Length: 412
Figure (cartoon, rainbow, N blue to C red):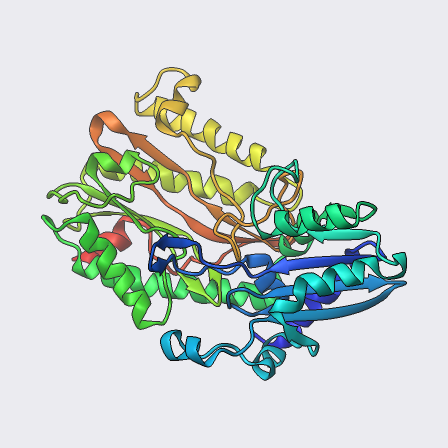
């Protein structure tokens, strides 16, 4: 992505900030896994949205005084011993090129610089931090640490939450972001097609995952979340990630999976017959779920609430399940459909959403109705990634086949 994208994101954030304020964003660090290992590093998505940098232990500070905005990026110093063991660290010039931030300083000076800035001539009134907690005293991370330090040393400084400002920016996907999601969907499509060609009875669920994730690795991508490959009766478990079951002839395999492109996620679900042929019962249930997708996409538009969309799906399922005599009363739908129909998608798998949970223009939403009939060992979910626009919805994953005929023909 071009650095102008990140420069503009910072500019829009600064416009929303109160005057006489400083906002800080941490890239975060990987927590310890054991005595001698760390977990895989996962960059804070708000930091990435504003800088384009995917590296540990960095801090972005945006200051605004009398309408004048300044930026500082604090990065770790070069350590030759560290580099011999773990790889080359980001240099100042590289950070400038990626982010467009010119003022790059030593990470070790962050706290002293911030406290000095906040206390200088009583100019600064507010410190913005990021937290998903209602009570900012309850969370436990770098933001809490710096907020406590500032409150102890400078009690007159207000601690504000910038999450709401980031919501306003991130819910409306820009063209560059849409292209990244489309690329992650392309990776998913290609990996799913390889998976379908190699799926066969008696293989194990973990082998399904291996086929999929191998293809992502060939594309320098990785899963956007823990791959789900749920066969038979495990298909009724929404997040079945303990992939140990052998897949028997005649069973369905529910594959809920995704990929990353430049930190942007896809989230796709397809349900396949392991032997390449649906039974009539599987086909009937599958087509009901496919119809629920149509219902959902028909009513999605800017301004409609997520609750209203989900209620329309429940109403549709009630009608269809009574028609096949699976239920006799509308209230019984919850036995077979027990999740909502979708969620925002972007830098986070479950991305920041509008405060009122209403769909907005240029949101990307998943559409993922499902039916889970435990007594028959049938779990079916079909999920696509959809761009909501004022002129109608665009199914970004429309090229990933999903009709019964297309799936059977492909798997022959």
